[in-house]
Length: 139
Image 1 (cartoon, rainbow, N blue to C red):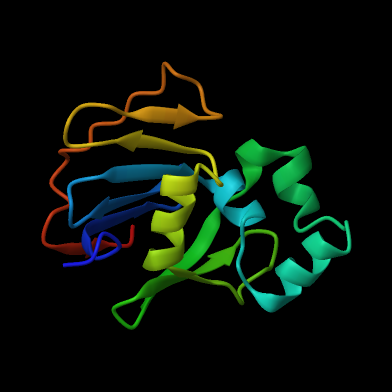
Image 2: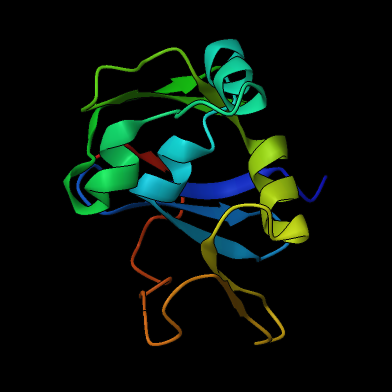
């Protein structure tokens, strides 16, 4: 199994996306950070041009929501956002790279207990053993 293979995924449309990778690493991404990291061509072009990807996620991060979530085959997630955006596919391989490179803020728990809180509140505590094993839970 590759490090980016997943065991479980949970989408809480109002709070976070949690991914448990096959090697036991669990990453919980807050929605605003995930929206701002959208990997689609339009968002990449906006970032490269120094333009905003999502004014809503930047100015009112607590208001950003997922309106629809679906698996993109077995390799990623397609997320529709409350700001109207819906073209990004979040590949699990890319999400794992974000975790390993600390490129996108996430609460990370590693099987050896050595977590990191890349740019997040270190007091954030998520129950990573909440019964999501066995496939996606797309809330």
